[in-house]
Length: 116
Image (tube, rainbow, N blue to C red; front, top):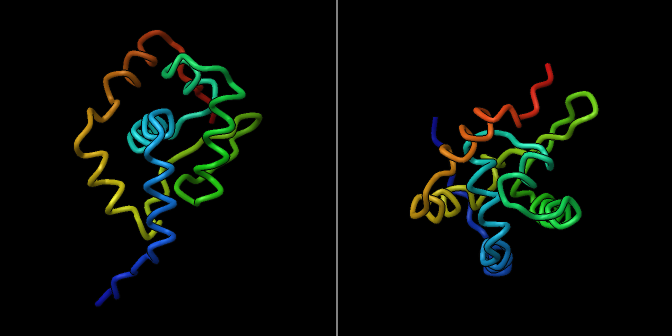
């Protein structure tokens, strides 16, 4: 099946690159590309306040770069793999450590939220 390539406008790509130009949002994208994370996990990983993390996530969500999913009282965020800039984001993230080690360390310290 042939999939037509989706192109971004200059404005859309500029917005994505501006969002990823912020270190905190770039770090958030590294982590949510590895596994879905809730705000409290990102607070631990990034050593920032909950309001700060929430504000960055709101910007990423408004741009549709992350998806959110509710599980009980928790909201988990993951990378939107269907975003038209997904390949570009993957290319940028491919030049950085992927964040798996930090997420595994969070698990080893029993600081991951587990709710099913």
